[in-house]
Length: 244
Image (tube, rainbow, N blue to C red; front, top):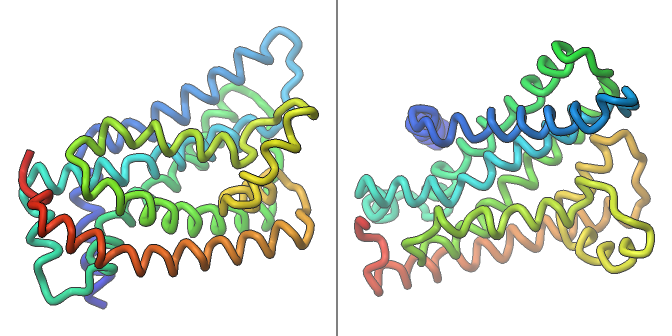
């Protein structure tokens, strides 16, 4: 299929950039080492440390989606990519997909490092695979939606992590004090990342979380489809696709 060939081509370009490649490795390893040191004295590991590191690593790859657009802009190919007969949605998705695909290496990387550090490796089941798949879908949709705003900015690389990281932290990656949870829960219900994270952690979410995941994901997809042509048309009109 032409679209898969486009994704394959963009993936080859993506992994040639050392920043994109090293970011996932560094984020995954540093998070796991932090958790290892935090529990080293008492050796009170929960067995979920590698899951936290894996989620953080995959999401760090997601944060490079805006950087991928900036990379294309710097090369001078972004305007040509959108000025073709290919639908804008497909062209943009082909550029952003490599970040989500490459990010999947974070989980096996975290698993291998966990074994080397002799930490427990829990939650190895079909539920984990389901959670990773749902997380992967959510990452692609969110990356696409947020990156639409970065098309209008020449400083996407500087802003990307300021936006992506709070979204992850508000989605249930880390536990929060009980008295804070009621304030954070509405944000979690509005984030398509919350359900996959719960599943990855081995929890069995209520129907409310499943329904929220489906509704929010569909809403982001429909809104992204509507915004794509609007944003790209404005970018061409204002000349925002030029090289830095």
